[in-house]
Amino acid sequence: MEGNRTVRILVVGGGPAGLFFSLLAKREVPTATVHVREQNPPGVTYGWGVAFSESAAEALRPAAPDVVDALTAGMSHEQMVLSLDGTDVPVHVGRSYLNARWALLAALERIACEAGVTVEHESEAAVTEADLGDWDLVVGADGVNSRTRTRFAEHFAPTEELGSNWLAWYGTPRAYPPSIILRNSDHGLLMSHASQFSPDLSNFTVEVGQETFDRLGFGDMTEEESRALCEQLFADSLDGAPLRSNHSPWFRTTFLSCGHWTHHNLVLIGDALHTVHPSIGSGTRFAMRDAVYLTQALAGSGWDVEVGLKEFERARKPVADAFQAAAKRSIDWYEGLPGRTITHPTKFALEYLMRTGRVSYRDFRRRNRDVVLGYERDLR
Ligand SMILES: Cc1cc2nc3c(=O)[nH]c(=O)nc-3n(C[C@H](O)[C@H](O)[C@H](O)COP(=O)(O)OP(=O)(O)OC[C@H]3O[C@@H](n4cnc5c(N)ncnc54)[C@H](O)[C@@H]3O)c2cc1C
Image 1 (cartoon, rainbow, N blue to C red):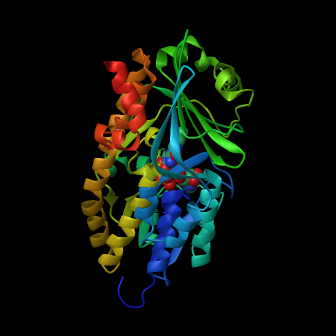
Image 2 (image 1 turned 180 degrees about the horizontal axis):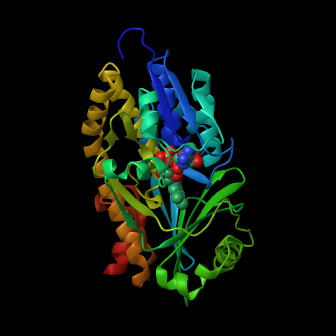
């Protein structure tokens, strides 16, 4: 927006996408009013730790080096373990940084508020056409179940694909290196993704196919009963440690895309607009990159919202589509696992690391020569 006119921006949702966009927008236009409405009280959120790869951190650094410093100051890992029925295959992967989701949000909110953004908690927003007239720009960053997207569904034309596996996102005090744990059991394949993200806590996501879910009767259990049974099923790996819940019901992932990204001066970003999948550990980065592209597009248009939003979609969509395509390959691989018999731990490790098509056999071999040589010997 030209001259001295103050830009008025309403952001719905104080997750990574909404808070990061608010911060970047406020820094771009210090005179702007940037107001975030978040339904939860401060410090309340779902989930446990989230991972950030080194490349994700470096991609975000130019936009806000202080934010990236805050998000890379804690726990990090360079190795991961693929564990099949108790046999562990340790492999070298790129560095990843981990943060408790609540700590990541607190850091983003603190930095955004220091820049002059206002965040109104316990404020559940239901955007209307009238709101679009009251604000220069309205950003729907209200997550995968976005009410903003639903309210304007005929304009955004969303398509949603429900995954076939069931997941529950727990935490545990047992320290895990980033690990994919597979157990062939009488009930079918049990899968977990575990990773330490703070001195005393690890993620522990449990994933099962529909048949196993039904056989174990999870559909008729309370959240607490499911947690207790998962603790029992993974007792050997947990080694006596408990599983803990944080709003941890069973869910199936939604793979979401929108045919259109904007409606007048309303735009969706983050999970509200498009999702990847927990198995590629990149949803937060994906959401925050939307914030970067949106700010750049608006700044490039001199804050002409109509022009800026068109440019956002033009510049961001091809990159986002390619990322979603990689996520889809990961989803297909995971969802195919319950129907297969997996017996070779190194083959499983290789398949896992190459599942998105972004790591080749040659890349894997370069980083993990001993693991690959052992596997090639087994094949002879
Ligand atoms: C099991 C699991 C593991 C994951 N692991 C990782 C990982 O390791 N690394 C990673 O990068 N990503 C991971 N993710 C994905 C990541 O959590 C999301 O992709 C990311 O949080 C999306 O950010 P967002 O801001 O778009 O949405 P959200 O984080 O969902 O934020 C949306 C916000 O909007 C608020 N809100 C919703 N409706 C309203 C309303 N009507 N009014 C006001 N406020 C509202 C919500 O309370 C929330 O605070 C994982 C996800 C899952 C489920």
